[in-house]
Length: 177
Image (cartoon, rainbow, N blue to C red):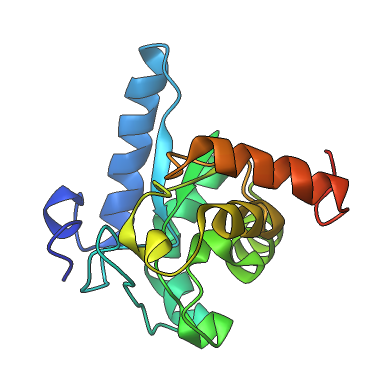
């Protein structure tokens, strides 16, 4: 359904996506690169564009497990090193429009704990409208790390992002680790 993701997806069948993404990942690894699986927990069934503002998936957790999570679960079972988390909102899971990148329900509980991912979780570009139209650089950066993100991609103001993390560690909002 998504005008931005739809034409970039392997298929609308999650099992085909899983198979094709594994083949692509293996090819990328053979080239000496690290593949990044994206956009967790599944962006293709949203209608809006997170480059501009909020994109919402009203699926329940059970519905995600039956569809969007299949390729990610397969990737994790096959040793995925990096997963990019989308800025999509999942109100059926979060109860509000908090983007997945800023949600511990999505990053820590679902991706890390339930699916067992222990690699690098990276945000989508933090300069996208879903973030910049609703959060400051500092707030979004700290929220993402608190949610379980390891790497912040393209914050609007890298110096503010950096300083916000230093300040959050000093204030014991997040641990130095």
